[in-house]
Amino acid sequence: MKAHEQTLAYLKTLGLQGVLQGLDEMINDAESRKVSYLTFLNAVFVAEIDFRIKRRVERNMTGAHFPVLKGLENFDFGRVKGIGKSEAVNLLDCRWIDTKENLLFFGPPGIGKTHLAIAFGRTAVEKGYKVCFERVTNLIKLLKTAEVQKSSEYRIRRIMKSDLIIIDEIGYTPIEKWEANLFFNMISELYEKVPLVVTSNKSFESWAEMMGDTVMTTALLDRLLHHARVFTLDGESYRIKKSRKEV
Image (tube, rainbow, N blue to C red; front, side):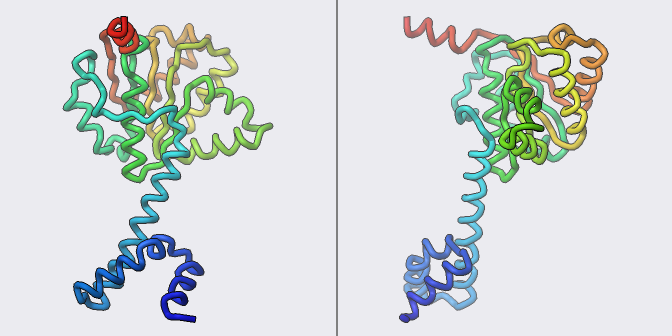
């Protein structure tokens, strides 16, 4: 077996896919620049590390279950009151994830709450955090079926082991009291362990009516607000504004 073929076989056996894909280019570069063995070896390590980081980010982006990918670069801050561009950009450092701070976005439909939540979640994934996005209706469905459906159990396990959880659209559909209890138990388990990003079209005062239990809702909000940055957004609906332009 030729040396090159033998090297490829070794790389496949060791699972070094990053090196395998760029081996010829690295060899040619090393020969043309006459680099030392140590420099070449370091280049091999860097290629493999970069490849694995890229694959991990791709897997985590898929596992996040974002409905679409959004970024701050296409968010119209001039249309929305309640959060400034510089304030939002500062959140991209993700320090709030490390300090277990929640981000809570409140405001009417079409104002960009979900856009912001996805933008911060996407950045977190790109920085190496494990993120899970769920609309509250699907999250409650998962909680209700986790004991009887393997797919729901697996998803809930992944959610609970995440570095950041995004819960979208609280308040758009009514929640039965026993469903609210499941949700409360989950939030209690995550309290001060995993940061949350929450979006809601309901004010705090409306949550008790939505969940059907004032005492439980008070305890839930207490946990969400204890370490949180609250953004109350207002402005013209993006979808209404877009419709007007089309007309």
